[in-house]
Amino acid sequence: MSGPRKPGLSEAARRILCSFLERYPSSAQKRGGRKLRLAKWDNRLPAISRDLEGKERFLDAVEELEKLGVLSVRWGRFRVGEEVEALYLEDPALLYALLGEKSPRERREELLDVLKRRPWSDGPLSTIASTLAARLEEDSAVGVEKPDELRDIGRLLLLTPEQCADAALRALSVRLFNNSKRLEHLLRGADRLCAEIGREPLSEAIGLRRSFPEVSVALFGSLFVAGRRWRCDGEVLSLPLETVLCLSGVELDPRSWSTAWVLGVENKESFYTAAAAARRSRQRGSQKHEPSAVVYTAGHPNQAVTGMVSLLARADTSLMHFGDLDPEGLLILQELERAAGRPMQPFMMDIKTYLKYLPHGRPLSQASLRRLSEVTHEALRPLATEIAGKGIGVEQEVITVSFG
Image (tube, rainbow, N blue to C red; front, side, top):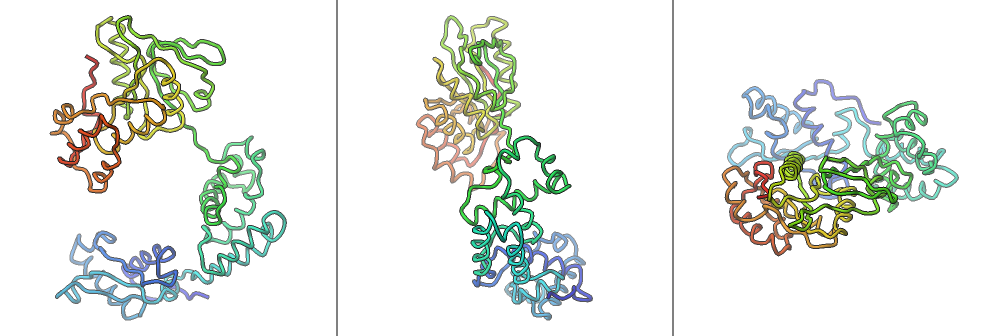
């Protein structure tokens, strides 16, 4: 059994050990590999760099833990006793004992004991229990660390989609556990467990993934629902996926002098601005070439967005998209084009617009800039090259929308 917390262990020492405790279960050391190494302690414990007393407490704690034998220290060059380059975990069992926590071995034994009891021990879960027990014996992860969670997840695995269909998530949680939030917490562990043994995520298998994708759209024309015509005059509609799937068609009203076209807009404020500009243009009868529909894509498009874009693509329209002038914005256009199954062109996503608003841009990380290599759209390549050279991205919201 793990021992009680070490008498006299300083608060700074406990914080250092807690950092190791958090990382150890997923470390190479846990799997028999190299020792767990943690560095950059001024980021982990800001008090180190904030004041002299904080740094002294940290250095005293390092010395304390080194003497106990739980950690070893690598000092900065020519800064022995003054600057810690990295700390290494020497004794995982002592780490858990000093913090009064159960060791991984003790937790494994508790999980194995749960698998020997109902609902895991017999019936439809017995085969899964055998698989999990074998993984635990091999010291492999099973996605769950607490015995009570594993026990309750067993109850969830016995549920059917029909049993889950007639109640909200928290109502079902009260029914099962007399705790409104217990089910939401358990589902995360249940999905991890299923992933470890190669099964479909439980939340999807029994219909408990609570996701309600929506799409906002402003269009001039008609939507058709089960043969009924739904007339629209540019007002913003927010439609859930369920309604989008019921739409059988769309008819857009182009100006007499132009063909209808659809504009996707990445960010919410720019979407409302573009939708309002299109309405004003129609009301004034101006000769601007405003879109016949504006769709809010909400960044990377969800199912409702792709469903609406696909529906609009089937009409006799041209498709365009207006997004951030950065790697993600360019890739979102490509994602929408794939969903539409038809060519989609950039709107105000060109070098001229980029250079105009460049003074208001923001620096991009190297990781973000590397994503420019994924840009394959012919019309976006010049802009991608320009962004790569400047290392700056321009947010859509600083760009004034114009249909002139």
